[in-house]
Amino acid sequence: MADRPQPAASPRVGDALDRLSLTAIRRAAALQAGAVVRTPLVPHRGALEGDGELLLKLETFQPIGSFKLRGVYSAVAAMSARGRAAGLMTVSAGNTAQALAWCGKRFGVAAHCLMPETAPAAKIEAVQRLGGVPILRPREEVFRYLREAGWQREPTSFVHPWIDPRVVAGHGSLGLELHEDRPDLEAVYLPVGGGGLLAGVASALTALRPGIEIVAVEAAGCPALAVALEQDRPVEVPCRTICDGIAVPYLTEEMFPLLRALVDEVVLVDDEETRAAMRSLALDDKLVAEPSGAIALAAARKRRAARRARRVEACIVSGGSVDPALLADVLRA
Image 1 (cartoon, one colour):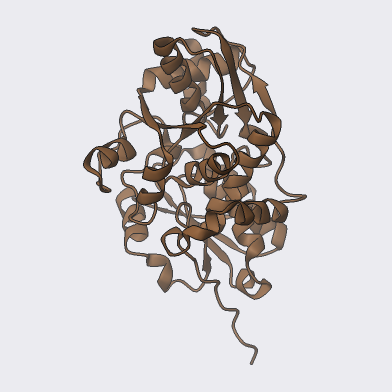
Image 2: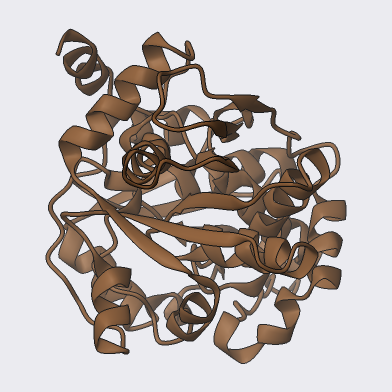
């Protein structure tokens, strides 16, 4: 009888902070060749307060329409063939699930995605179209699974959306691209949910350009990082926001120290400001973004108006999997 494929162990950021070195990020970027797209960095064409440049990094151009492919693909590609053969699993509100499903299809293995029942139908359907298997559960049950490390009881190879150093290093490839395209970049706005995107991009940028300003952006209705920084410890907060992709009510113990070390400022954005940014992206830049994808632009517009910035700044437009009804409502406003 053949041996059953063994799942790949899921490493944690807290156990391997040294893996966020430029060497690790460049290694992850090399793994992405032929799969992850080098996305464009373009000027924002909407009206702005102040001078200087505001650039948009368009992760909506990835094959799944989100930056999540960077980290998830890096993690799956780094597994052994035996680990992948055990099947893949993750937890996601939608974009990580799509990334895992895409990877499962590319490598010819099963991909299961634990998702909250409240996930947008468009994201659930996208996972299914890519060949993934959504497992829908109540939102509280999904976060309990993460807190209690439920994946350790699974026969599959688990890709943690936030604390897997392979994922974080993979997201860091975005930071490499930003620096290569604009080495004079002075500030970057990054949406924060679990923190993996910020940790990877900021680790790359601060190593390549010391002094660059890292601005974390959260929904005012789900300010887990802002509250954690105030109290100097991870805490759980209520979450009520249209930004489903970053509606994470707590930071992990593994991720918080790294984010605290990297972040210069947190900007909170309310849902109306996010809607306005979505509308500007659609009408001024001819781009479709989901709320979590537009929130960095909302923060930059808000902050520049207050500071009259004369700088070169960039916003990550992190994803475009928007519910059609929400998009229509935003555009009608």
